[in-house]
Length: 304
Ligand code: A3P
Image (cartoon, rainbow, N blue to C red; front, top):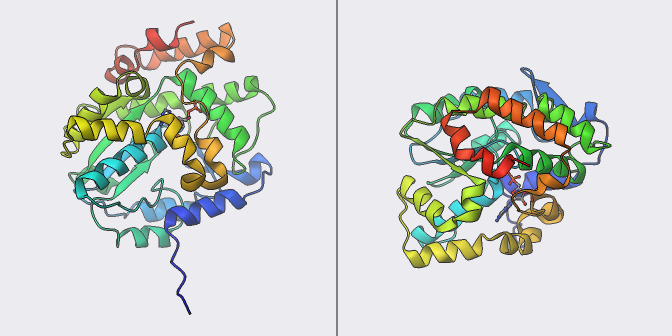
């Protein structure tokens, strides 16, 4: 009898997400140390197991607040590593915090370099990633588009509760009462580490507007240099259109939830002037004058 292939962590997590039924916020979210997480794929047990997770010097870690281009950058690194190694690497474990401790055990068997990602705040990232030489790529996106993307994601993901209106979601977003907590706290905390040699930050907007330059920076940072031709190939394989077309293969029924519009400035279609000013005030209070604040190019991308 033919042996059935063992599913990867990624496939098992997708199965869980696809089979989840939308229920109440109480059932779908749980609070761990003051932050909300999706309960179908995150657990206290997993967070505890992560405390002793062993990173490797050559892991490639992507850190993002939700909806800032995580899947895009995962795919980019996947293409780059596969190209350099001349063989397709297995893409496993989308976020290190998803799943169960057995999945973390299985990650020990994965060959290097492992491409990993996380939405966790700096304080909660397994310490081993910080102690080792693991390089960390931070991807940030302007808060207004991130909020709109998050709102739509809540609507289309069975594992997240639906908000009756954008206005209600906005209130929770601005107060940090959404999964993974406050956008602003997240960026403020990571900003403290942006000058570390093993950390590099790029913005979604720069990647959209000048992909070749950003990819060159990313590949040099990870010491995976690419030729001009290879950069073009990665660009075409990871364009929004190309990733959306392949999304049924990569993300199953949830493809449309992960690849929605992929644009800059969609916030202008939903934000009221008052909401826009509220975000401007938060930006001013927390991020103006910081390195990550500068990288966001706030005036260009977030002013009415
Ligand atoms: P929108 O909802 O604004 O379309 P994440 O992967 O962190 O969940 O981020 C999802 C956001 O990144 C979505 O934004 C999605 O469309 C966008 N995105 C995904 N792949 C992309 C790509 N190849 N190019 C541009 N944007 C992309």
